[in-house]
Length: 249
Image (tube, rainbow, N blue to C red; front, side):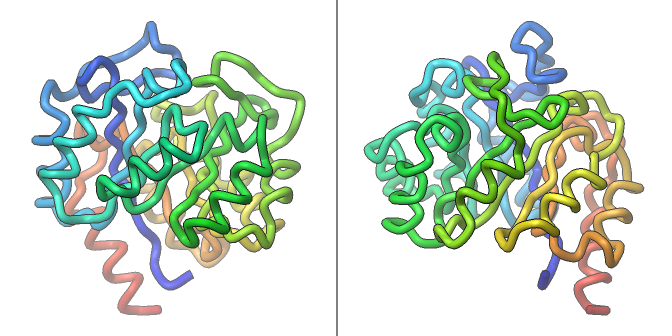
């Protein structure tokens, strides 16, 4: 792993930047009414890559917050990865044409693996798979349903398919500020060759330090949401630690 990337998250619901607790749409906190302004702020703080989720899209199975995403793409120059409601080739092409660097496929990765494999062949390096697990089993349809397969079962389907990354979210921790579930995430990363991004529960500078430990070296990075919005993590300090580790590597 060349360097750990800290991805600030912008989750979109009805055009606003929100954070959910454990993926529950009824437990949403609005953190910014202008997501594009939030995106610019993250870029100005020194973040190198944005993570955006169209939450309404994840439930609807098609893009819903496209206008908000468009404004974000117009507002920043750093790369953006986007998930939520990406279930067909037309949607993938639409986002990539608009300037999204990497699209994240979640539900379709469980329901239709051949579609994801074809997309990864067609768009090398630009397709990521989002695996969101509750008690080890992968949830789909905006986390409304839990499947019977494990994250590792699905991740292994995409070995050698050209998938750029797997984003592994522990739903029970998401938005709860309990700390990343690094043991499970690192075990997943060690079992496959695809880079893995940790998500769910990012809580403090201790999570940043844990990500920089040798055991986490196979992780591409981690996604931080609520802890950045409510000031539990000082962005400048987090990025300084990451840059220092990069120099030392």
